[in-house]
Amino acid sequence: MVGESLPEFNYPKDVLQPLLSASNSSSLQQALEILIKDSRAAVGRAELASKNILPTVLKLVESLHRASSREYLMQATKLLRNLCAGEVANQNSFVEHNGIETVLTVLRSAALLSDPNFGIIRLSLQVLANVSLAGAEHQQAIWLKLFPNEFFILASIRSLETSDPLCMILYTCCDGKPGLAIELCRDTGLPIVAGIIRTFASVGSREDWFKLLLSRLCLEDIHFPALFFKLCEGNASEDRGNTAFGDNVFSSEQAFLLRIISEILNERINEVRVPNETALCVLGIFKRSVSIVDFGARAKSGLPTGSTSVDVMGYSLIILRDICAQDGLGDLKKDSVDVVGLLLSNDLTNVILSLLHDLEPPAIIRKTLKDSENRELNLGSTKLCPYKGFRRDLVAIIGNCAYRRKNVQDEIRQKSGILLLLQQCVTDDDNPYLREWGIWSLRNLLEGNSENQQIVADLQLQGSVDMPELARLGLKVEVDQNTHRAKLVNIPGSYTKPIE
Image (cartoon, rainbow, N blue to C red; front, side, top):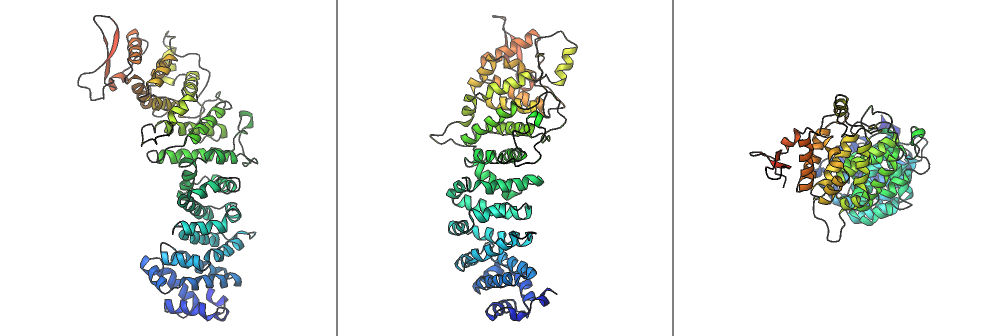
């Protein structure tokens, strides 16, 4: 039995007696089991708080740590964690009785072992995480004791078991005291977050607290650029992919970070507005990745592909797509700059159109060309999609940018992009939902733009394109009897919103 390994006389009476009395038991082992069970419920925690049991539990943890009683220490720490879960009186008592230093002593010993005790570390971090939820004063007390050195040691442990509660502490502190987020993303703090990212990247996992932390730092604040480039220092990844195709430029951890940010943004697209600094950084990353990706091999899979450079390009493209979809969501601050307009002013449309123009046409278009002498369509393509869905993502960005932006509609027309976009309104096995995104883009190009509508009408009348999709937009081509020119008009009885 565990209780037999540590004689009762090793513990002072002022530690044992309150525990035995509160649990109505006769042994430490039995007392811990009962109190752990009782403290799982709010009413149990409140009752134990009224008995001021937490200082006694802290003394027990200290005694067990000195005695190197591993099993009892696990149980006592679990009880401490439960007591601090949402019970303000216990959380206050924890800080007042130097609980942070007590738990930190346990953490140091467990973390510095040649074989770290992940169970003790996790429980100890959960204690601090629960205490941090009490408010700014508690968060500041924890931060002062652990930042940066203790946090760095803990972040260096490659274990999801310990990284998740560590993320909870960091997120709660940064969210409660914004100044701490700035500290975390300076030179002394960045290695902490980078270490956590490397742990999650090594196993491909992404827990909720991890995503909340990254959202807080990278999407709700301006720290994405610093964190992204920190992950490239020191050749963090041993396997950086195929260096012949530029995979040595980015690390796999950077690709992983972009993947997580793209997931978070997609999940919270109606909740967060991406900072201008982050948006411009992602655009720069995308442009850099385009210059090193091999477009000579046909895609075998969607993202992730296993190629670091392709994954960096793909996930940065998806982030840009969703940033451009945020136009009109929420209210802009009086002095804020439109992030989509900022991207457009930094050559986004031209880069995307150039890539789309250089791609070989979709499979169904290529098949049509083999049986046709129509050479007006794009034939000079040399590039292949580096991942399945690449063409769709390019089209999606154009569609999102063109939404109620006449300057973008006009730019695409002036760069002969309308016919190119018409080619994308087809099904394609390598680009799921390409047709739907193509129709969306066409709709946005035509809305309120008579010049673009005229070009589409002329193309269909000439037979350059066959566009049954126009009917889905509630449009058809008519020839004006006076001018003998083709024009797009709304189909009577159509339920589609008119193109004005």
